[in-house]
Length: 590
Image 1: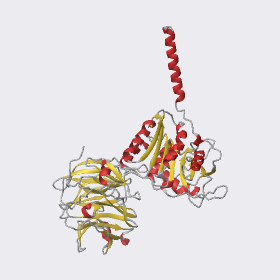
Image 2: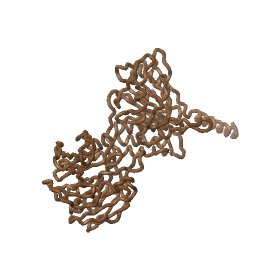
Image 3: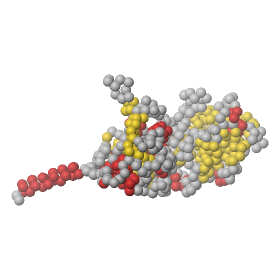
Image 4: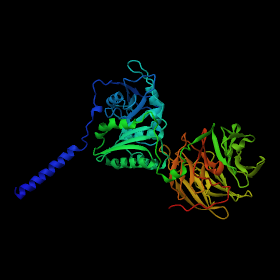
């Protein structure tokens, strides 16, 4: 072969190789479990339209419900919910896997995204709700499924008259989706792990369309939730204005592994959406259901702060159920006081002893509003519409400390200085105030300008004052001068905020002896290091928290008031009490 012919042959060979490579991309074929098999019982597919949502008002959507032949209404069935309707030949796969015993008897609910029909279809488009419902973080879509759609599904029956009954156990429930439907599936389980514990996503949209890029960070910081996750993506997935899908899915997988989740994945070379999801769906279902009916569990997180604070086997315990809990606050004995109040005339106050016994405190109901103990052993409280701050001694004798301050929270330092946050009672946009009240009753405004000053705490060495701004994602830090006034104000602690709010909702705060700051927020208890970073987030069982403190023997138990519940949890940490002598914590890592 002459040199020219050899060059031509090489060029042709390279061309053919590249052509074959292009043709091979995303060339995934479904296996036998995705194809109708003879002698396998086939389920029924019901269809209806759902247009009664109050969460997404005015929307309408198609819903298909797969009911396996083996379903017996005497036993509520397992559940698989999928976004964007039927995907991955799921009804056929379910027929085959249920027949083999590779997954339990499962009813599939395949729901399309909502559309708001136009009032003028000839000249105007419908409003398409898909991105709004699927891509956003928060619990809207989870509430839609759990409170609206699934009850409607349970109102249906099969053609042979079997009523549909769904198991309510998270161990019996899975959810899946593709692209934006994938992140929607994860969000539902993330928000409601008590309702869904198994998640399947392909080419998931964990990118910056409506905040999905935040998930890997949140996963690393949150106390792990009982969720099992299967991920799929391909190297030719989207890379557009919102982000890089291929890299985002890998980042999700790494975050889940770091946080101790049971996670599996398959990576390929497909695009968006691609064929690989259909090819792997049967095996993904086998893996998601592999140990059913056992509940999903997690291994240890690699988050060092969570690993330090959380004690294995020590979860949240209910102290009591209330109408509306206020407080809590700890005294020098480690007793924790909190209130149960609907209004000032119906308030009660309770005490939890260091050994966990609950008792009601008789006497003046204003004690339900107690916010702090001082170094003198007295409890300090707000009382009355005229802005009194009153101190109660052990004999319940009341002393008026100051008037004219309609306070939110207060802290009493070891030297007797009192710091109080005050916000407008009409919830207007007027700036809040921070007050200093000296032991003799002299009072000064020491700062203004926060949107809504709320929680307040002192550093363990009592050289810094921390004030939470409810209407932002900041906790402010001030240096305390020798005379008690404040200096060098800084937006210091950066808090996470949920997608469905524009602020963190920072309320009660506490510090431990290592200098960590614990902040009650809309997303749970955010634990910050000394340099202002949220290192972990500890949710409460009812996903609400307004106040917190350390109490119990050794002040190693975190108490949290959570709307109608009061919880406690023992931690591997000890609270630093403002009334105690200042202590210098170890220097932080910068």
